[in-house]
Image (tube, rainbow over all chains, first blue to last red; front, side, top):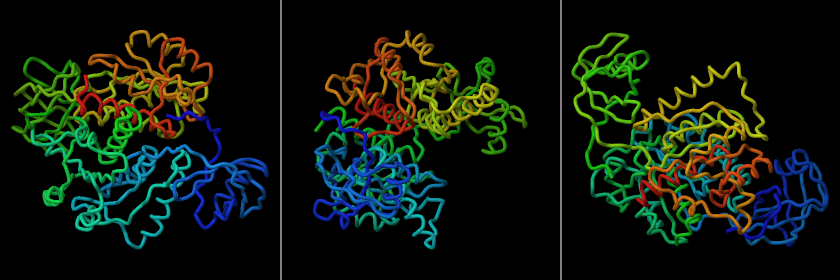
Length: 260
Length: 260
């Protein structure tokens, strides 16, 4: 629960090299945002977020069009980060669904995203456009993080196929995949049972399939690697809604019910 | 838990006047969908949903371009409807946010939607376009209901201001509004505490403010009428994300945790 009321100051994520002793240097687009969009002046306060997750209230001491210099006034002790670190693996899907997952997933507390080249993904990402695409996605993550008062910007990993995902998954304590086929049998473990086993600090991986679902091969590979199939409520969710359901439920469980 | 595996048949919501004895008449766009999009034939099966929430597996007995005639084979005993009836009151917001709330809210189990003309809503709905707009929204609700296997299409009410909403709210057992200002004090009741008090069959009203939040007047009026202010997780959600958080959490609580 938030007990200390913090004024609604604008937040900026500042790379670590721009923190020098008690000075913080806000540059580039963010400097433009401070001076031109927010029209702040010397003496005004902003919140600067360090990539390590800490945040400080800073007082602007000087500015020009390219750089805003601010002095750390006070480190903040509030954190809006989820006690459970959830990485959403989202199969590539049509249209702007991935962007919606990034934006809403950031608001709902995801700590990282991995685009999955699933066997039934009908879209294929063009490698030539990858750099441009990743730049746009990074911007969505940064803006959503600032807007919803995150302490950290979620990480975005490069797209990978199921084999590479299985290698990456070794470092996660909890691994789930949304698989309604399995959920129709009596053998499955409910999503709530899985969530109840999460411990604060756990790294959780949740894999969401494409519009056509996982292939049998993908489902088998995940099961062999210890991924638990779960259903996310009784209705059939669209691929981009599944991540939101999972993240909202985990937030509800740990941040509103206060289960630990 | 679903114990009976139902084949993935296409679903259609059929108005009550098209159910005559054991015959169901699928007409208009839906007939086109059966014959041209799904390319079904006589003898194939579809699921027909009655407006009362019941659904039947039906066998197609004849068809032409305008009408598909089917015979009831078997009434289904599964329901994907939430045990708690949640009405989302969504303040008018910019862009296509309301459409997103309708589509995702349907998947996440909402039973009705009320557009709210909030004091700080920056968009005003043009009454001349209201009919066209409502037709488009109804289509979104119907398609989302079919896609996610709802038994009932959520209701869409006409837009209203806070005063009319207070009159309408009399028939609801539980009334909440998302109000982060209140949530920063120690006096508020958590969202999870509120949800834990819901009983199956309850009618719940959840009011979500516009981008600029509720006015002080609106907040006071709701508090006087017995609405509980709640926060929806520690991060600042965009207006269109708030309804998703609330609905996913309620589904998780009642449909996955199985709390009653």
